[in-house]
Image (cartoon, rainbow, N blue to C red; front, side, top):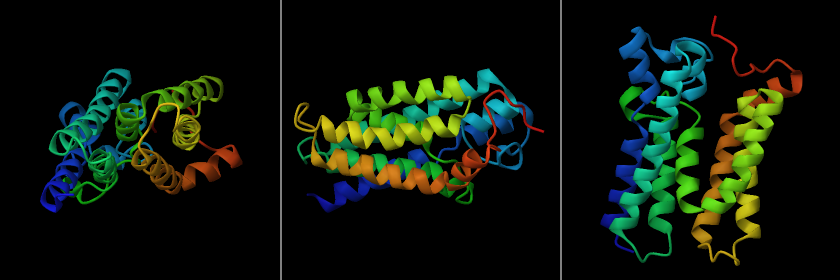
Length: 206
């Protein structure tokens, strides 16, 4: 492993992740700090509450893309490294989204960027998990529940398909780490879901 290239891929991934599109779009459209409205989260779901569908879709797509781009760049830097470069660069992008250096380390929960990273690296396992997650959102109106199901089920489906799809072990390890990270980031959501006080999709910010 070339240490310089590896560190470079991590830095690029983190800096890409640190671009907070929800913050930038909210500032452009409404002249507000998205982190001071709604749930206080700098992500697509809170953008939906504060700004509406159009800006939320834009944030979702852009946050997914920055995860994909981070992985692609890392893959180009080291195409034969058993997947560690793209896996760790993807993780760095997620960490950048959660704790962005450009915005005083106050970001989102990394769900959209996680979708981009995992969909690119383990497409079929993440697709299966994603379908179940979307179904849960449709039935319960809890975006956080769908997000949690996605990150929990992706390592499960990845493990089950590990040999069938010849998935690198580095990718499976990434899915497991991301699941733990996302569970920790959503810990307050988990409590609210069990208490029945979690915000449902479509609920406007006060």
